[in-house]
Image: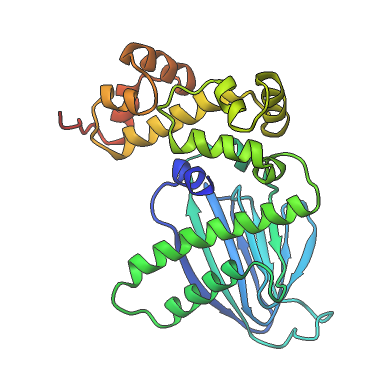
Length: 290
């Protein structure tokens, strides 16, 4: 499901580069319409968070700023034994379309800090290693490889954070994704948004009554199942309108609306604009092929 969440709001290609620092240094990062990340490849540094707090980042630490909030990195200072050692960082960003922000992302803190722990989150460590190697030794196909690896990196960062939150018993989306009943329902909706889902049908999949399933889903996700399903359908529709030449009728059918009129009304309520005008606004006036 995380792949769907990211795909629903990604805009443009992600980017990354390696940054080498030594001596006394301070690098500010202005507010950004996306999500940024930093990975310490060698040495150490300090992160100055948006709330004014600071924390030390060591080799292997990963930081994600999911809301693109202002922050800074600087040398660790005299309090750190590695203060005079060079620091190598892997820094990058993902451009996001905040108009379609998934409620899952709204629950994330301004800073996600994953400390390096041997043996924990091996997939994330592998992605970091591959990304670092690709930047150090670019070869044929590096542009495509980097884009794919950056997508994987974001998925693994979010997956690792939600796993850690679930282990701590945190409420919200981390608990929803860890709950087998709610997670299965979310996956079913994401995999087949066109299906005529009902609360009763989703509850039966988990051997729960309609009322019991609705309470469980709403308590963890924060909104009723059908409300979330409508939101997801219209988010998928928005992506199709921007990225494909599919006709409005086909878009409507692909997200579960048998009537193009009903789809247009629902889309306008959610996005404040008709599907046709939305497409024109996001494709430079290009019309789809019929």
